[in-house]
Image (cartoon, rainbow, N blue to C red; front, side):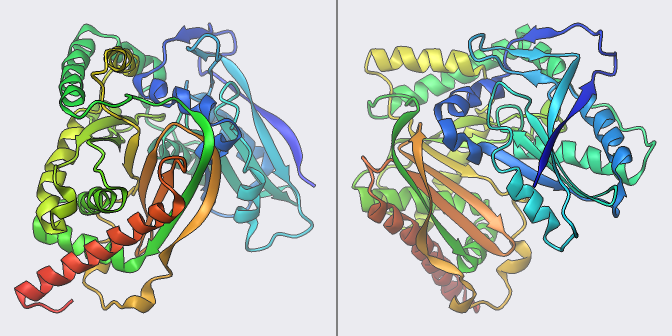
Length: 448
């Protein structure tokens, strides 16, 4: 049976350091509604990452390394009181620790520990990091960290995991300093940052006013939200081949397929999509151990249903680049503007999302020109992988990667888009991308 414990992490300035109340960062504000609105379904917003170990380590040494590294980061020592809608950075905090002590250690130790942490870090008001330890004979054989998406995105979580791994592999090593939450808040509240934010919001408003009127941004609502997925090696390879030939990203190729598939199977093209953007291309955010994700406005090209995928890729890619360039702004100010526009009937529907969640956007290049065939597709037909009871979107498309395979998932509001239509959309994306890649190869006289 697992046991529970706590790990007290302390500011480098000591436990008597002053607690500080700070405004939310722009990215935290972007996640605020989802973390509370999803309710129990928020567990899918928790990221669990195993920490690589050089081998079994003494339990006391692991705890000391964790205490030193985690305590050094303000984001780990932060709570998010719901009523205040601000963040409280504390000088010391007790991180929950789940300890598994099996009679013997098997090869699936990390998976067992990760599964045991499945419900950790779900409460947004609790510590944003939970720790899992698998111990045997006084030594730790596996460490898993669970991260709340309110405080971390996957890149920020990986950065912190890497710092923990370095401390465990090389005890006594001094790690380079990183940007802290307070530093980021100071930057975002500066006159220069706010001026840039207002300029970005002006571009958002022009885009929102230009599109067909709708309901603006949608709050989290109860309902039926199935999540369907296609796992396809062929889709990944074809998207990468098209991207290389058309000088764009594989994500833009898939997004073009999504835009066309929605137009074909729903009878309408959502005029606006919110593209989820990591913002790590900003130098000030590149190594920030925390969350930097916001959304950029993407205007879908008109006439998608009657356009070929090849004709759509170039305008979609230009629109995606524009979305990435306009994804850094004061989130609360954006919501206020969109709310005002919705009140006057000038806001479009902003409940469609696309997230290229691949951590290595170039990771398919080495697979694109290898021999391939239909037998390499594990789940080419769409399958329902989960059901959710709350969501703030009509449709949420996520492009992920699993080795050489594309993982294309679609969450839909079943009161608007039924699951049969959602499955048809995913199948259409795969079909169009494969056909476009085959057609381009045939025209060039090159083998697939």
